[in-house]
Every structure is written in structure tokens, then in C-alpha cells.
Image 1: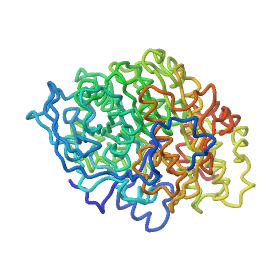
Image 2: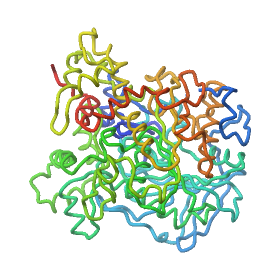
Image 3: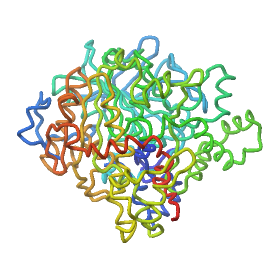
Image 4: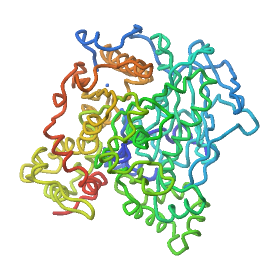
Length: 625
């Protein structure tokens, strides 16, 4: 199936929490989504994707190896010239190039996936050749998100290019950009893992195009090879159940769930085997991600498997217990989604083997529709899960061994450094229900306070930190949005960033991004989830509104490139955090200066027991007082 340009593109990510976007937009059918748009009801669910200035006093603190004129255009460049590379034991991969960058697209890294089975590394190309002049398919049928993406980033060239196919066949693929004429030199590699709430998105989105970043790395004298990957999403990538555990045992593979994470790991294994043919140094690999992609970066650290990467960059998302719910998702917590999908597809009466057989044969679009039907209010909850107790699981270490999903015991053995950051108002993404006249302030406070199965309610002390303890202070639920935004921002993002980063035993660099969104979107005026991405790839250069914004973009690109090359992007966490304030001014501040540390500590103390309550608020399942 081909997706027309007018049909969709990309919307967003933090699968609850990343996950809740870029972590989460509403996961609705396309028709349902358009219906909501029509009635102007879907603010938070419509988008999640989305700018600053560098003061002269702070410029000297950051890597600024090569000066680029502010007028330089970083838009993707048409590359008409063909090139081919012979990859030993794998095959010949053709691509296209211009004078600055060569790109090789849609390269399969695994065999065609079997639903709810681990991927198998592709050892060699069928037929011995691959045409890398165009992007490969995206995994299954995703939610059509172009309209939502444009609400966040009002420029179509940051979404998916025209003609992307949706197909499971060939969907486990990756894209490579490298400097033209790199020759035999081995340079660092950056591997980007896209976000999208673990339910949508793809490595072929225009925002992630590697051309400007690779070109900029050459201008800086620190060239890199850049890769984006596609992996399985939604229930096909992360469903977890007793049936799947039994199936994993029966087929001899072990494990269950986390198939999307296994895909990512397989892409990293392919890269380790083959990136040398493209001039990449397999010993200097930095994995990068935003939202669900950022959670994935942390998940690969927690998995404790050395030899795949040595550095990580995470933008808005960790797996710290309670922040996003994911890793703490046990089979008992994940089983209900599986049961609901079976019910929606009328498969509950079949035996475990027969219903899995039916699930593997049914049209992918119907599976996605069933997923959406399970969560009609806002988004489907499809997340990584704790499989550490299962033979062959993705996670080698369990909750206790990682101290609440913070860092594995062997972290110092293979992680040489990490950058993690967040934004000041990421939670605005999840305040949709408060905009409805359907609920009162009493309803919201009642929902936040009320225990749910497996989850405690928020304490009076915690709610008071955000001014949410007394519903009589508010005339309507809309008046609660500032406090609710802060509460959800800390719960899903900032408290986790702080807790994880200050537990890491390796060099760690933290950034706090508070610049307001200047674009005419529903998130204008907020430092919203995904906004920082407009400054890290160079692909949004042409839409940034000022010279100061372009300076900020250059600073972040310089920092990412320096870090991938083994350098320090700014001072380590012990000396301070890089803070971009609401006017775009940059400064190094101590822990707690950019974020309310007392509030973060209060949230950290309770967030592990709040996951179900938080999910109720985010998914619009407010309980009447």
C-alpha cells in the first residue's frame, strides 16, 4: 500500500510518557482523528512534534569548531549521482550522492519479520544487490499522522517524503548518510532511533534526514556517518502476553514482547558487522533518540549488552521506574491489552496456538484498528516490558539489579558517556482532558488522589507541590492546566531525567530546554515535547525564525558531533547543566536552578506507585468525583 503525500506523514512520540508521544498523540483511526479535528477537540492528541538564542557570553563554552554562515540552507539536497559499495559477505549496495553527502537508503538489516517473533539478522542480500536510492517500507500500517505532525511542525518537508510504502515485508531497514569521498578513513557513527510513542514514526521522516548533520560534521573537521532505523511498532512491536511467552519457549527462541527493541538491537548488530564498508568506526558508535527513541536509548543501556555502542544521547525520555511505566510493565499489566485485541478481533474462543496463528495471518490494518479501538480516548498503551525473568528476554538485569530501571551493574564496562535532556512544559501534551467541559476540577483532583489496582493515588503533599490539592481554587478544569502541565511534565519526563542521570556512573551531560515554541500551532508559547529536535538535525534551519535560533541550532549540532567524536559537549553534571531559558539564552546552572528540585524529589518519591493514575489522566479516563 502506498501512502499519498496528502494522506499522511509523521506525528510524534513518547509512548507513554516518550510514550506518551513523541510520546503520544491520540491513537485513533484516521477517520476518527479527522472527526476530532473537525470538532476541534483534539489539542494534545493532534500533534507532538515541534525553537532560541546563544548569548555571546556563553559561546566560548561550547564546541564551535567551524563557523557556518547563518544564511546557510540545510534543506535536504537532491542527489542525482549514483554510487555503489561492495559490502563484504553482504552484497552490493547502491546509493546516490552529491558533492557533500552520499546516502544509501532502505537497506534491509533483518529478514522479513514473523509477527511476535524475534528478528533474524540478515546475513546477505537476496540476489546480492540492493537499490539504495529510495527509502524502504515502514512497519505495518501506522496511524495516519501527517495532519497532526503539521500542527506541530507547519512544514511538510519535515514529515515523510511522498511514496513511502507501508508493508511488513522489507520493513526492517535502515538508512545511511556519509561524507562524500570518505575513503578508507574510519569515522564515528551516530545511529538515530525515532520516537513516536512506540506506535508510529519512521527513520525516513524528513526531520531526521542526515544530509545537513553529516555536511556540518565535515565543516567542523569531525566527520561522522549517520544512520536511521525502522523497527516494529504498536502491538506488533511490543505486545506481551502469556501466549507469547509460551510461543517463545516452543519455538526455542525464548523471550516475549519487546520485539521493537530486538529489531533495534539487530540493526546495531548489522551495523557492527557492516558499517566499516561505509567508513564507519564500529568501536565509536553513539545511539541517539527522542521520546520513545530516548527511552530506547536508555533501554539499550539497561539491557547491559556490550559491544553495540559506547555512547548515548536521549532527548525527553528515560525508563526510570514510574516515569513512563514501560519497563515496569509486567506480563500481568500487559496481558489486558492482548486480551482486548483478541476480543476486538473475535479470537477469544480459540486455543492459544490457534489464536496466535490467526493473529499472524490477519491483515495488518485490522490489527492496528483493533489497537486503536482498545484506546478510543487518546492513545494506545503499547510499551516495552520487563522480560528479565523470562529465558531469552531482552533485559539481562531486573528491577532490583538496575536500582529501579536506572543503570545496569555493568554500565561502566561499555558506556563511556551520555547526554540526556528535557523540556520545561512537555506535559502540555497530555492536558487534553482538562480542556473539555466534561470534567470539573473536583473530578481531576479525585482522579489524582484515588488509588487504582496496582497504583496508589497522589498524596496531599505531592499535589500541593503543584497547587492541585484544592479543587476549590479553580473555576474550571481549564484553570488547572498550568499546574497539571507541571505535574505531568515531571511525572513523565523531568523527574526521570534527573533521577536517571544522577545515578549514571559514567560521564553524563544534562540539558534543560525552556525555549517557547514560536510557531502558529496549538503548542505555541510552550516549551513543548519535541521542540528541541528542531535544533539538532539542521533540517529545520530554513524555518527557524531568527539568527539567535540558528546560533542555538549550530550549538546543538556542534555538541552532538563533538560528543560522537569522543569530546565533551559542555560541562559534566557535577559542574552543572546546560540550560536554555525561555528567551533562548544559554547558561550553565547547578542542579535545581533550572528545575524545581524539591518538586522533582517529591515526584520521584511517589511516581513508581502512580503509573495507573497517570495513565488515567493522560488517556482521558477521568473519574467523576
